[in-house]
Amino acid sequence: MKKAIYLSILLLAVISTSAVAQEQDIFPRGEKAENINHTGDVWLSELNKADSSINSQISLAVFGPNAKLNWHSHSAGQILLITQGKGYYQEKGKPVQVVHTGDVVKCLPDVEHWHGSTPTSGVTYIAVSPKSKTTWLHPVTEQEYQNIKPSK
Amino acid sequence: MKKAIYLSILLLAVISTSAVAQEQDIFPRGEKAENINHTGDVWLSELNKADSSINSQISLAVFGPNAKLNWHSHSAGQILLITQGKGYYQEKGKPVQVVHTGDVVKCLPDVEHWHGSTPTSGVTYIAVSPKSKTTWLHPVTEQEYQNIKPSK
Image (cartoon, rainbow over all chains, first blue to last red; front, side, top):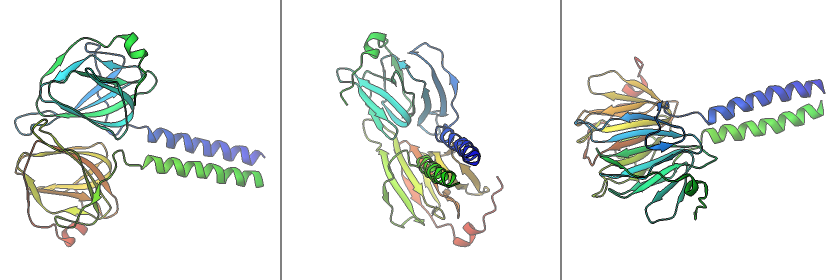
């Protein structure tokens, strides 16, 4: 029986290591962003700056659970590639969508929207756009956020 | 001792499931591409088409081991985000680079280059560019490819 216990401990150690590896970030998360246009913990890094040589802006955003951007819009639109976790995405006048790993969200130019994690799960995405201006608007209130009952 | 064996089998089953999950694709791989501009097995899917609403072309490419694109160039450049595995990337006149999960490769407009997996490891990347024309050139020969001794 002692053998069985040792074996279990060893194998459980292997399993935990494996589970951790599964949750590892693909791209290194950037600096924790100051809470200017969001609430909660968000880490941002620039994977490519839209410049004169290639007009593609690519950013990585890692949201801890319970983090949300303010409402905003992009002059040239934006594509979100969800690479990990579960979050919310909402366009003005539309219901909140739940987005998951593998989802591709297309936000057209000048459409007011917000996105974030859910209160209990983090979300990571790659944001892609041509060179673009972001207009920041009002926050999503805590009451609105905590009471979300997504239709999807 | 019987207990120990049962326990081992059960835990090994859990470990294998976990390992499989770790290797799962983030985005569904697309159709297997015809061998016109590459050798080996490559699956392509379009995550976003550069169109009049958002000028960002985003594609997912999954290379099985031992697969390589022909030399080519992009009129507007291209960024490769390596999301899984290990591959090769080479620009004309430069040594072959080994690229890994988490690497970001920037290929400037009209620079002749090729990329692919290594003979023994697959590679997956997300390719991002503004609307762009690809010019296909000659293949990388099997001899060149199999004899690569990367400097990095």
